[in-house]
Length: 342
Image 1 (cartoon, rainbow, N blue to C red):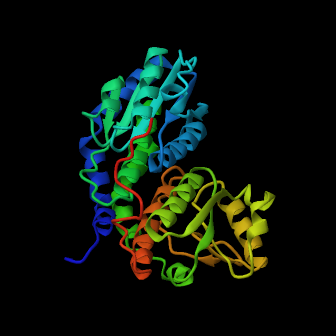
Image 2 (tube, helix red, strand yellow):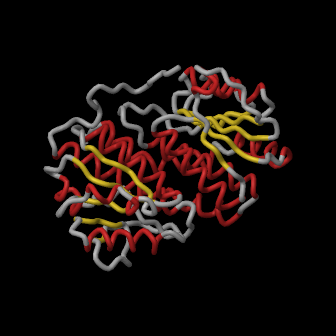
């Protein structure tokens, strides 16, 4: 369609981008996984910003849940501004950046390499400084992303990391689940959540909840509310929201609970129902909550891939919400595509 936004086109490209990555982009993933398997790192550190950092959070939970490998997010400024050496001998390092350009991310990768970590870059530009600084570079193969708000690059970054995990562990069920994703993503792009769109038409704020890998999806969703719709969205773990943030909830306030088919589903649904009972207008991506209003979802059959389809449906929703509010999601206020920080 001629009047489609770049963001909409790129959301619709997600299934094919994922298929291409899984079918044609696994050689560097396998090579990195082989070295990591041999190195047997004691822990993994990640460095990223923005949507890429949300991808890193997703992968933190995936690696910890699947391998029992502790994962820590390291602030890039530790290397770039404070020049503080970290003791990373015997560690693995994962740098995630769609552009691979930001000087602080590159500085942290160099510091990790200098300290003896096995360094892996996940990026959309394998000629970028980040890729050149790491031992292995995984090309997410997302192609050009013209919309300022990241969509297909976020999904491809997560898929790349999950593929690295699957090959490292030689985890056939996860590999099979990854290869089912493109067809499932096609279905997820058709979920537009009209009930939530109607509820958010004139709203200025909301809470977004998740847990485990779904918390990373909650963080990404909250960012997109801000970027594309100028809506103040706060992301919380469903385990934390009742410890204080619930104090801001007023009668009729909107809450989006991103519940996946994993061990946290019942816990998230329980909190969603509590917030609905307190007067919140709560929407949940599950069919087993009692009081919260269900939103359509596509199940993947694997707990490490299921949360990822929630963001595909969310992207389809948020692009429509931005246009319904008279905004152009391709040109968020005060933002540009590549942000270089030191």
